[in-house]
Amino acid sequence: MEFLDSIPLQILILAALTLGLAPFFPEPHLWEKLKMLFSGTLSKPIDVFDLLLHATPWIFLAAKLIRMATTR
Image (cartoon, rainbow, N blue to C red; front, side, top):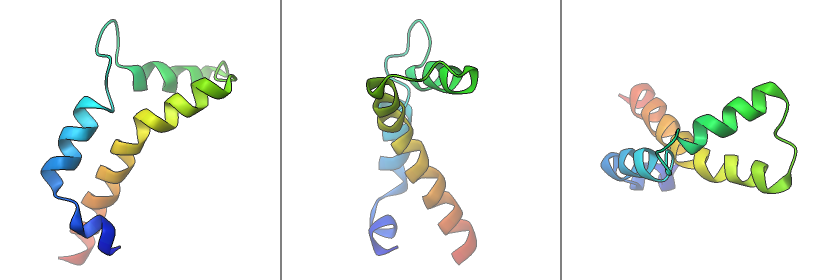
């Protein structure tokens, strides 16, 4: 958990909003991949990798926020 504590919150927010949502048009890439996941069309390995790539900043941000809420 020291690794997560060492990352500034502002960096995680910036990463989630830029890397997590890019490209922004016509719709955020993460949103597109999540729709594919829930509709059952996320089958290509590149799409699964892409989902993990764009979801990682959001996962780290959520983990950091949960850690901050539970340790205070």
